[in-house]
Length: 301
Length: 186
Image 1 (tube, rainbow over the protein chains, first blue to last red):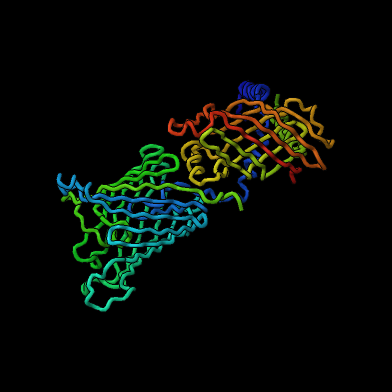
Image 2 (cartoon, rainbow over the protein chains, first blue to last red):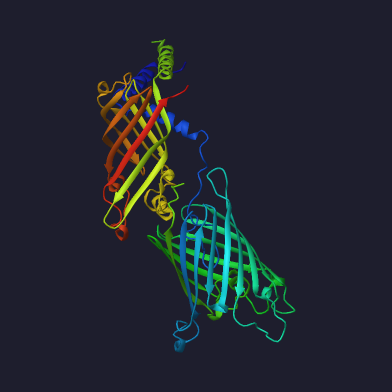
């Protein structure tokens, strides 16, 4: 051995001294508990990828907790380029009043009524995969929604069926929380029209959404959301939807405000029927107030 | 001097054998709950997945829990607890390791209830503090039940409460512990 014996003795005595003066007890037990907790422990699921169940216009992968009721009031003003006479859009307003409910940790339902096109909508949302440390890289949530346009038929002279009022959309929401501050989401989407808008339009519109959030502080995040539609399926005169917004959290409320070129607040109306041009200033200012109520203590079986 | 390494090895070996034969009691589902009381709001949370161990010969005790396993009445509260206060991604565990102060007061070989104090290091939110906690140990039919109640100040552990919610979260949080130990199987 090429060990310098003096050095060896010195280091040994150091360890003995260190052990003698070490005042912390139970460290062995703690190490043992650490080993024990590694055995068949539950996956460490990622939480709070986004602050609420909506990114901006569209859904995020988040679902409500079991027994939680979320009342959401969404408000959208007119285009900000509509001039001083309209107070830059503030004179006009559309609202959607809705309520969502968490049936289980992974399943939620919701419904709402929009003043825009007098729509009633309902949806169901299920978390299929959950991001978990070292086990699953992404969260995947499936969303199915249905919209009913109420009010008079566009063309009363033809034979109209109730089914012509119905629209459907299906989305796969795929997200990853990369870090505390950054989450990204992809949203492949199909919007189905029972009755095509015109003889030249398809019954289905396909789109791929992309969105994300950057946390600016513990309680404020900056969100963005863009839906790219397959050009050959786009409805005449429509453009892709773009929205930029902020989430501000204050205890039981989440306050979201945003800028978007979309007027509608249902999947069909913002994904496939957006007509506003950002560059011309066809931008709506809007906000949403979400208030959650716990109807059931999830700890009670 | 030549025999130093051999001696060291022998010592190490001896200590391993000793630790194997230690009378260690353990639980995987200990319960720790806390309670915050203010005129505006009462908040309580329970963790039923606490790992804890007790060495009856050395009088040492250890606790380890996953912060995310604290469950609240409201899921939004739970999210805020993890996201904003405990920063559970950064500090996933809270631990305690310490020693029973007067081991002679606890007779682990005799059924009965013994009041003790335990002193050790409590780590919450990445901050370690030396604390002394009063509690009791109940020995019954080869099992040991530990109960304790004490208070902690979030501020001591670097947990900042923003002014907007300061009236809803107590300055001092009541913590209670209930663990039923069984002899650890080898």
